[in-house]
Image 1 (cartoon, rainbow, N blue to C red):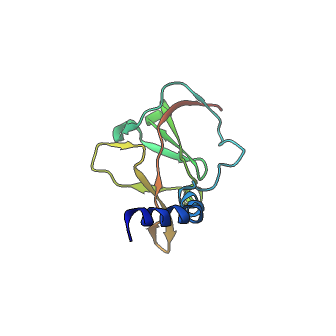
Image 2 (cartoon, rainbow, N blue to C red; image 1 turned 135 degrees about the vertical axis):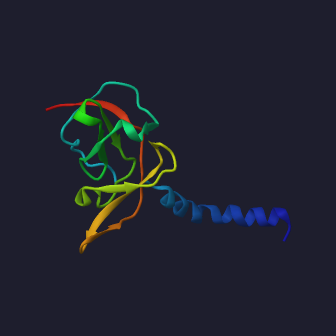
Image 3 (cartoon, rainbow, N blue to C red; image 1 turned 120 degrees about the vertical axis):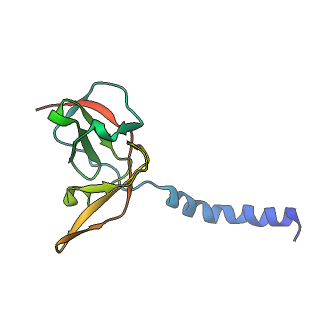
Length: 137
């Protein structure tokens, strides 16, 4: 088969394969209409990375939202995941691996599901930028 014949064959297949390719690129479930509680006011520019020593605790608000908090909750960075992280809120805890001294957007977190007396790591979810916020009370 010559180059042109192969190209014509591929062009004929394109209408059949385009929907499959688009489906593979489709993001997960869309975000629910109600915003996470508590509401938050953005107070600065988003950061791509957050040093690990910048936060001492996290609060999982829903399957899309995690608040990273410094000691005394003086600083709060909200991460709104690009896709639903199924089981994150139910697990109410997660783990991550990094060889750096910081956590960055696109790093992967894993909800931890309690199984018997231990934990099992669930499927991974990609992070998003860290947005400094002031939580409303």
